[in-house]
Length: 283
Image 1 (cartoon, rainbow, N blue to C red):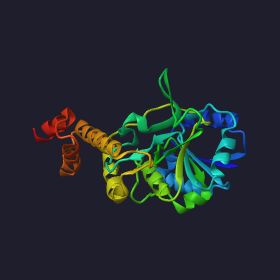
Image 2 (image 1 turned 30 degrees about the vertical axis):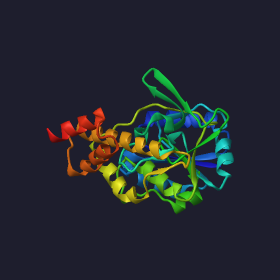
Image 3 (image 1 turned 120 degrees about the vertical axis):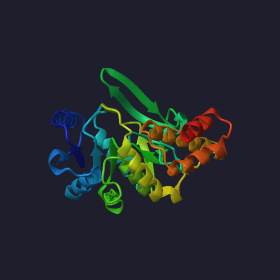
């Protein structure tokens, strides 16, 4: 049995999502819908309120703009979460989280792991990246918030941080960081879903990126043990550039950015990306 928790603001998307779940889940379930047009919660508070109401042991926190393509995916959740070493299941994520307040996609693509379809209008892109062709699960350290599945016990030990993250950004990376301290996080390649929108990196995102950094910097970078020191450095460099570029895009130049500019100088002083961020910062 699964409690499906949704923070909803678009009734049409919610209607389609619920119809899709009824057709595909394959196990008894309940919907816990937080009408955020009425409540005006942060997503962390909405999810915590929803989880408190849940009557089942497995919790699936879902964006309303996803659709499942796998029949009986609920049975697959049960099977995966029966392994008590696993604390969280997602649809996409990364094997390394650098010590940089960037999005999880800021690392080199070979460290992505995913099993979803990204839709944008009529355009669809299948994103399937696994450890090996035979693996049904891929270990990661952080997952995207479109789909987060765990147990009520694990959520109770790692509630969403609605104090620090009182908006709609970085809650997924924060939740991942809580869980990865004690349990594994995986992408389940036997569950295929479709995401109907793409995220936006706005000024609010930059605000919560800094909050995330100061909360977790002492625990970062965190990564799957097979990643080399060279690849860790490369990920730190890529993530620093991504974060600085996002800040510049929103005309944000602050002393805080110097942490990551200095990181780029230390790792690749002669690289053209290093030169470009220095040129813009000091012009």
